[in-house]
Image (cartoon, rainbow, N blue to C red; front, side):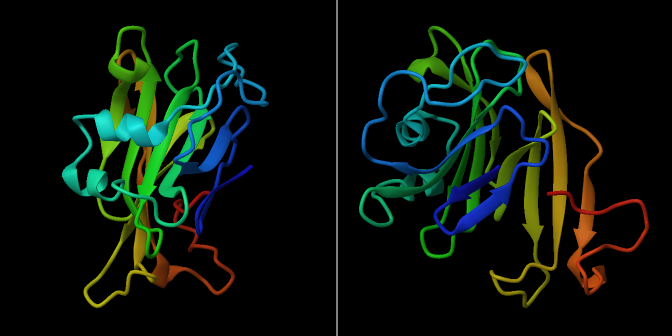
Amino acid sequence: MAAVGLLLAGCNPGGEGVRSEGSASSTPAPKGPVSSSPSPASTAAYKKVDAVQLLKDDPKVGPMVKKSLYKPCAADEYPVEVTYASLTGSKSPDVIVNVMTCADSVGIGSYVYRKRSGAKGGYDNVYTNEQPSVSAAVNKGELEISEQTYDTGDKVCCPSGEDVLPYRWEGSHFVEHDGYHTDYSKTTVDGATPDDGTGSEG
């Protein structure tokens, strides 16, 4: 299932049970479940979350990201991509949020929210990453963070490589494991990487 946010498209390999809402609108989200099958680890129905408001109220979200949410990019569309999936074992789906720039849809922040009764807005921030060109996705039931890497002189459109960092939930937090780097300059013409045991997924 492809998750589309403004001009940015990301794939969800192994994304069974993943629900992507795409770019966030300033229009209040309707109450009630979204038409989607819950992931195998969760029997709760998906409910849309006001991701923009969640970010604005979150003290863990940096000022640069909050500044990008002062107003929509166009009409009522904010540069926010929202995905629902079971990552933490909670009874309710977790909310994965990517924030991008309006101009070129480059990632500036990725977050994961876990539902908890009593939390402000009903959710706890359990993961924050505000590295340049960051993007969060779901791969085989785990959180997968991608960060584009740039060499001196690289344009925003054309990074030199990518770091892929998988995370699994352990008790009360995410733990990184088996991350790898893909150097685009060593990628063959057909998009495959040399047979060194590493490569990019998605």
